Image 1 (tube, rainbow, N blue to C red):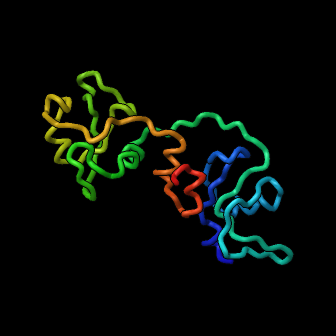
Image 2 (image 1 turned 180 degrees about the vertical axis):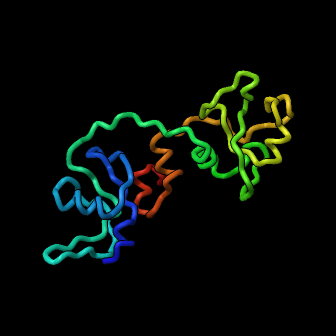
Length: 171
């Protein structure tokens, strides 16, 4: 088995089947071998050792319920652009150079928050300047909001395998 396959991402579910995180296949196989997790969804590829073989895990469930502290998605330029799907929130253009724009400019009391930052193309950001969208006669495609942990896995990490979809509530 090549090391590339062991770097494949595996969805990790809590004992109650709620998504917790994503890990690589090597860590998932270690958890399974030690009896700390069970395979819920698998691939048809076998991972073999001298005395043991296991199907490549795609989704695993840990054996003991773990209380997961509420993790907030970190507010970064990269995450704002990912949240907005690399799409300008004013004109809707994609596949161009993107910036992060303050909906309410800092000079007018706007701060750095999920609810005040949006992805914008350079043209729209320059057109809006230091104004609010209303003052610049521009309209937002979507109201910006903080992404949830589930939304982070669904959209930022992405669905690495179709077998993940039911566990991410995407069916």
